[in-house]
Image 1 (cartoon, rainbow, N blue to C red):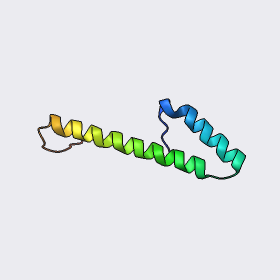
Image 2 (tube, rainbow, N blue to C red):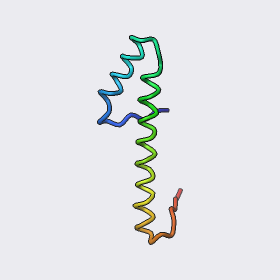
Image 3 (cartoon, rainbow, N blue to C red):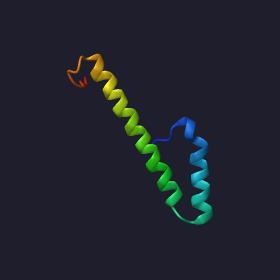
Length: 63
């Protein structure tokens, strides 16, 4: 499963087109790597926000 942010949709399409035209996956891999890094940074920021709200007591998950 992969994640593409809405605001990066046009870049995603460009990466797909470059991959098809050049018959090389590098453009797509680079794009998806950047998307994953962006996702992880967002998750770390969310963690810091939750941790701050919990007075530094950590992250808790309820299932």
